[in-house]
Image 1 (cartoon, rainbow, N blue to C red):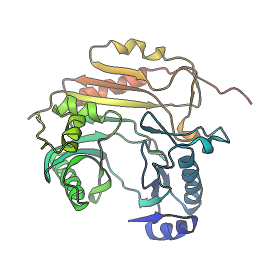
Image 2: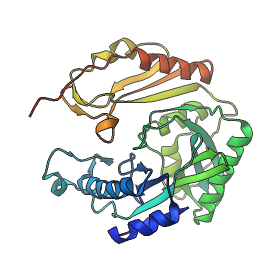
Image 3: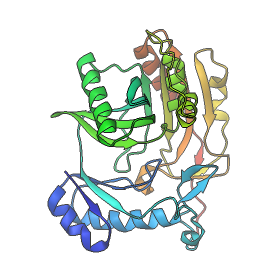
Amino acid sequence: RNSRICAPTDVQAAADHVGFPSVIKPVSGAASIGVIRVDSMEQLQKAYERVVRDLSRAKVVAGALVEGNEDDEDDAAAGNAGSWIKVELMLEEYLDGPEVDCDLVVSEGRIVYGAVTDNWPTVEPYFNETGSNCPSILPRQQQKELLELSVNSVKALGFNMGVFHVECKYTSRGARLIEVNARMGGGPVRDTNLLVWGVDLVEEHLMCSAGIPARPPVAQRPLVQMAEYSINAKSTGILRDTAFLDKWVKHPDVLYARALVEAGSKVVCVADGLPTWVCELMVVKPTVQEAIDFINSIEADLVIPIDPLPKQ
């Protein structure tokens, strides 16, 4: 169930149709900005006001959508994403179960590539991403159903060429669609598909854009077994330094370990708003479960130095 919210007067009708728990989100957006779980009408009203405010502050920096500065009263005027994002929201039912990305390449109306990546539980209520692994460890039948749903959704929308990032969940009622993105996924998505299956989604997108039939060289078996982790701030404050990553940078099984914010920057934890991604890591191991276990052990080992915010 879902319902569009185009004005404040639509909020109650949307709640009556969808019910709770549910998720409010922008129809157009990225990076989980403005995506919030709500469990009551009171939470929905507050979330609606927050999402509209957040979208007015959002900025496009180097082609990426980033959240504005909530502490700056004038920051709404500085937001530059208004021409990219229409403040039209959707309320949709909350889905249980594991979430996946299904990355597809469509050429001349044919699906020439499809792969499933497992997404780890997000940081609710904001749905900030945490990590993923590839290949998927879901049962093969579930993976098949999720891919079929993704393919049928792209076809139903009338697309016959391009690269698509489809997000789904395998719920207690079976495979369910979250959204279809008519583009390559962000963050680690390109690296994941290239490393594991040998498919460069950027190249495939360019081929489709040039009208050249896409025939990606898909590996018959996974080339590597990987996991990645985007670590969210566990407290709000100022990041003192990024030296906490130094011991992992040159580890032979760590493909990258890099900070996503500079030393001296403010970071936010989930208790205070949309969490800040502090750093990201990607690892490979002989099996995907070993990769998952290894990267979780790194996360547990990290001591991220966040100092309290100065008192006003």
